[in-house]
Amino acid sequence: MYLWLNSDTETMLIWCVLGLIALGKGMAMTIVQEVDVGDMAVLKCPSNDDQHRFQFWELSTKDIIGPGNNINQEKYKYEVLTGTLFIKGVSTQEKGIYTCISKHLDNPTMSAKSVELIVKKDWENVYEEDPSVRIKIRRIYCANVMTRRKSCSQLVQLSASCKLPLARDGRVDDF
Image (tube, rainbow, N blue to C red; front, side, top):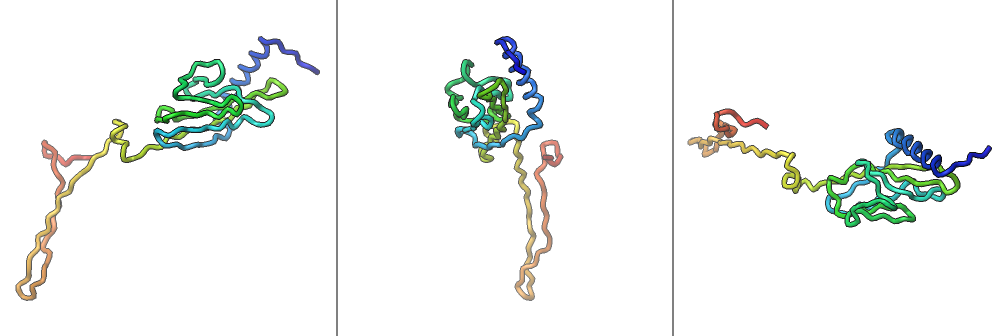
């Protein structure tokens, strides 16, 4: 039995396959790749193999990176044959799921596999770059009262007291 497809039917079939791919994204195994802030991320297309050829990348924002799509060419570049995606100067905005879609060479089936991009931060710079992170430093003042015994010239600790700095209203500042 042969199924003859015209361009409209083939387009509809592709969109149906993409819909099924979108439903199954959570069920498939996702490759995880970590990259530091500011570095270049290199995502290899896991669906590109001997039987499939790269078509495009779908981002978690639903943007498409591939032939015929307007993309930020300063930020994103890709290899047409392998589907390898290069993301320059990665920031936390680029984190997320990147799905590579490839088409079978002999029939209209598609293959989709995902890569999760995790962007690591340098914790020394987190506070400066991310105002949602709040770091509080609390000073604790301690005083030791020491006395010297007359009989043996030995230091003896009589008491130790610590106090937390108070807020202007007299309350101890909570975290």
